[in-house]
Image (cartoon, rainbow, N blue to C red):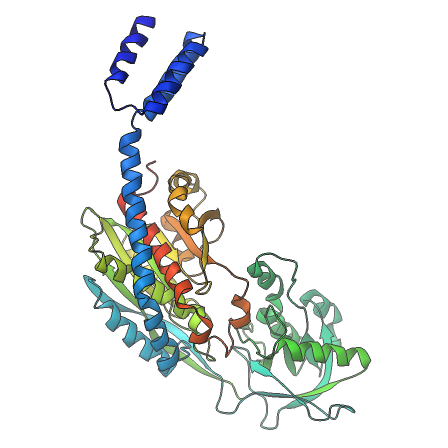
Length: 500
């Protein structure tokens, strides 16, 4: 045994074994007395003997990733696209004329990015129209604030009021359970859900998740118990004058009553008035359900040279709410995904695996595009090795969150762990968690699902509001997200997953 070890020593002395590893090896040999334990050290150091090759590989990857970030920050193409999408086309609710313009525009852009093909994939969406007349909420004959108007937006799915609105006394609740317990006390009233964000959460998405049920389901609960309208505190993280819209869901057979969100400042004001005594409001909406329409997701593809049946997807959702310009939500995710293709074109990178950029339709009020894509992909018996979604704003990226079917999730984590050091210079980590509403439908294919996770502290100042415009997006922050996505796509494309 010792002769074999000495022979092994001589072989290492003639190899490219790193000098510091050689010294460590000699010291360990002197220190270790038990032969079986020493053999364990020998086998572990065999892997270290390959360090020049591994180091060269890591250096090459680091240099290419640096080139991605440098190139992206220099050109900032995504910001130019986003300016057109947000300000020239504007808000893009699924089924609207603006959404059709956005489909045409992004299709044309993808067609210039070395794609092998670009196509529009049909899906069926329900087109909800806010109405020709702006919604109004005003105090009705209040002693101190007669006829004061409160800043409000109708919620997506809201019903229309009579021409002159509905007028009734307000009844306030902090939760759905509290409202359900009140039962018939809501009959003939305007129900007001006033629960605010829990500001103690570090992650604002947790605060959003803790409050959004009152917007999504509150009007339905109110209508089932005879309320004539529903008012909800906006899902916002600060006190300001921007009301936040968003989906509300009425069950089949439940009357669609007027449903609106108040700005957080006016919600605070209304709650303070209710502490002093009874308050009546007049709520006026002119919303319409314009029925089912055909719309499209936009898909660009670059065929892989070695593993064409392994697909790596990047994407965001092309639709937005019908106020503002949908810049952060989710124009940012769309242009970042397109910029991945643009970066590879500029750097002359030829992918081994098939790359797809998918701009999903109808995420905001139905996810019809994602459902149609996943169904079609499964029918084609495709396999998405990885799918990366950007739908959390165009702020500075902090991490990728990842998820997968439980049967395969543990197989992917070694790859991500091996790449953490390459993302350290850019302050980006990998955290177990969710991925995205659209790519989540691909989970049965048992690939890796990821979501770009940027700094979220300001996201809910703009989310679903008129303030979500290009001026709220910083071009460098947006570019950093594009570069992070392109870097991860590069690594997955180069080395695959589940093989570390």
